[in-house]
Length: 262
Image: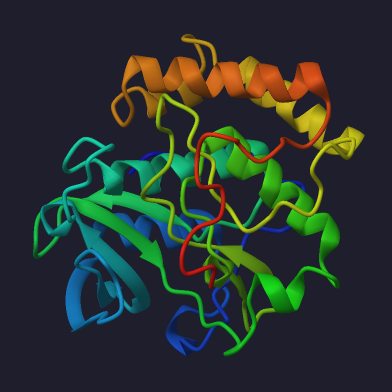
């Protein structure tokens, strides 16, 4: 298990989301269970474009529900190397932990019943809540998500990939198509285009830039997951956001809103 790289100032996630056996666990315990526990598949998630399983992960007396996305179940894409989406899910989590935002569910990369894949804590969410119902009441969080998506070059930020958990937190999921070396930002969050990025976000981006050096643990954790060109592109996108200081414009040569939008 890779140690969390968080510099979060808020309390780490605790399991109170519909699984009493995991109530009160700290982040490190959650990651340990996800990384080393026995995976038991409950069901195939039918609406996913790739093979995605709802599972239980049991370790000693603790058991968590999780989402398991094996690499061998990934549908080939023309613009992403085959079998890399699970690595990108994990890389996204590592970057979110380094920044301290947004909330990406604890995620590990490990072997499982269908081979190597991403195993991510399952979030019990409130049905019917998504970006379009939450954006007016959670604007500051949506700003952080918008910048985060620009950093990781998210090419599929649908509205339904933003959840309101039953814990009251905003959570972001589904980050398999990220970190491409070429600009491919596609998202429903264009509310802040050309607005100044808040100073607190820029400060965190400066910290991230410092961690994107080859001597830093974050870089060493990302290196097995992404290509060198993709890592260099993360650095370049972070530099661009810091230099410009404003939220990005929609690209003119790329469909900038995913379909369906939710």
